Length: 376
Image 1 (tube, rainbow, N blue to C red):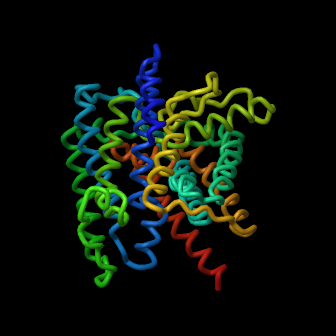
Image 2: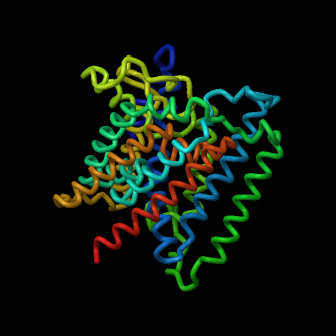
């Protein structure tokens, strides 16, 4: 982690976007450490609930969304005092709502279940020494290429006419924040009723700072609160949280250089979300964020004694590669993943975030069901 801080200070001293690049580096490292220490994996927390009625992880996710909703709506009042249509807050992940978004989310969820993690979790598990995660990320890059190749058809079929629905346009900031908090509260109450008694007891309280930071995994609600706080700070200082923009940009740049993509991707660069432009420079805000995420997770895992490299088998490699392709395609057509479209979208009051979350859960359920049948 010391190298991250030293590099961030060097970047901050550079002219132009140096301070923003330094912030991306520091926030990425913090995000990676929080994901690793709290096991903040969208697939894992959903599987815990579906297979064991353990709702703690999903309650942590709701905590992240509640903190982010309050923070985002407070910031919106400064960026865009009157939320009149059709104006949108700058950079917020508010996307078009259509069956393409629903399909992309479901395919992404299916890919999560097949590969064993979402893209952000594969990144932090890469920091833990997972040697299977690179194959999932490679597959995601291939999936992005397939998404770009199918984009023009999907855009003309549905996305071009799809509405961009932002709750503050219809309810104002206060109404939007209140509605989201009520929905999150209702979901939390339902999860608490479903939560099965007799779950493993929480670890004893830590006896010192080192044990608190590097002892047992952090409770899900702690990870959720910190994720929400990092999300708000990231939007204030640089851009909404997202982990697929750099991967998508690399895939788009490589595929375009090989002549595999249409000469023009209709309307793509005009949408908010995890933007995937042709790379013109070596470093980008999202690229540094993702690299620092892996570094932060690695430092956290190493300090906690959880860095355990393990060679994957051929079946695991194939599963990660196939699941990665599905995640890449889904993230491309949905303009983001569980971090960019779901987390950042719902925090912003975007209906696209809620729709992504609903159909992503459906895809996860389908994928876990298929895996369960294949193992019997």
